[in-house]
Image (cartoon, rainbow, N blue to C red; front, side, top):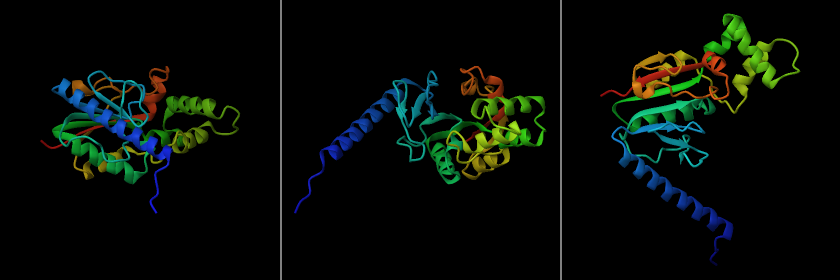
Length: 230
């Protein structure tokens, strides 16, 4: 006896098919429009001019791409890849797989820039080595997310970074550097917030800036760049 698909299943399947067709059309238009394709992962509302802005949850300025899956993109097509405050939302193994996909879609000599919370900065809040800025950061997070909490603001701030916002794995510089190198990147460099030796990678980070929290975001964020061998 044959079993016919339920109407809702057919609708979902049709929607997925339409989404894939739209995705392919958007990608073709973008690649045809530029001589220097650049890929922005997890763009959210930060739509960068001249970049292919992608996100799992799409809006009118982004193309659908789930970084936890293989990228539906051609190999060697992009000159730059950028993400901010994204990789910490993935389990470590998934983050490694994402970096391998970044390597695959980059052209030889291409650049990657990853901005993410720095575990070293977060630990400095707890042990006091973060100084007055670290104290202000701890107070800012504690007041924002635990306004009635007793005791140490630093304890609540660290727990928010480690367990809040859907974070799964927070890197320190040494671990992210080693992971980038392990998947095949070279020349790993730590860069200042929104600064780079590559003009295409200057001024990209937007997380917290639009909300007026640039100082706090700068404190918690590390930006590492690396290159694919030519």
